[in-house]
Length: 450
Ligand code: S3P
Image (cartoon, rainbow, N blue to C red; front, top):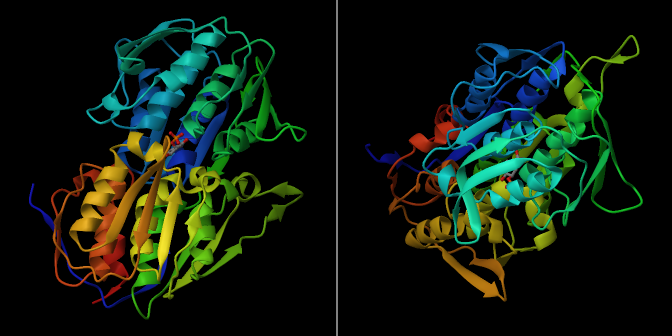
């Protein structure tokens, strides 16, 4: 693999439409497969992770067709999956793996889930533990007190659960909610901090009996054993996590202005925008109105997933404190926010970023190594068990040889850092970007004013 060379951009401008949100896309395939009726999915993000979810359900004999970014799922209902003939491979897609565990917990057959090189090192006990409490029989590769892929699971006959989650994770919450569809009775999930709520929103649009318990914070209740009905059409708004790389590039490159159209504006995913605004960023968000046709929502996305346009102009940023309660709403944007912090006046502190250690790679290690190499002042400070990162901004950044560590978000963050650094930045391997956003570099180049 030849290293990828990034040369500085003078500025950045244009209007872009980005591929749909990866998290929403996984859920659209899963609920499309488990419901009655056909689901047409528009603006589907064609990336490795989402294709892994499609392939998994095709192995379970669900018919799914795709032409470019339009996907049709021919639903089979809650009990229509066929026992797979071999193991299901979810590549390095953690969302595919963990959400499938929830689905398999409800199936009366044995399934084996296997994973790629990176995902095979990521913890699975956080999902296996609650699913076992519901009655699933799960065996996993275990090392010390943790469990990892491969996982075999035999489900069926689940009981409801009341579960207080020890970690704030949308993947864990979603696995439990999916399993709860198969349980007799009402399940309740309590999160320590609210995480992305795409599963809840989409379950509602498929007619599930699910609601937030307003008397208790971060508590969701769901009644099982009710068949789902497809809303027929789902438009997936642009992935706000992919948008993050363009937003930060436009902020830190002088004389830049970009507009990202039809972006996801789900409040549980907008943490990075809130933080950047606090840092002084000139970002304007306009929500698309909910269009009604003969009394009905013509656009499922605007009804169940808010979307709109985001306009960003170059800005002088200043440091801020990102509190641990904010982390789930910007978890995937932490690497690119670290890049933004390098261009901010003063100190930026990220509190409670522990979960970054167990993402596709250890993103604390990879970002500290890379940003330090190009001249940033960045440190990891531990307070008890909590991990924090402190960045002192406005140090001159100079391009060097850096590494992606095989992690798509580290690679894209370092591309953006390279655009604003002086000299040439070389990144060892950017093929990992295909995990979430294969067209990233192509779209980036359409915006450059070199
Ligand atoms: C995701 C949840 C987050 C996020 C991941 C996608 C999801 O992971 O980092 O990229 O689609 O539910 P955790 O649930 O592990 O925090």
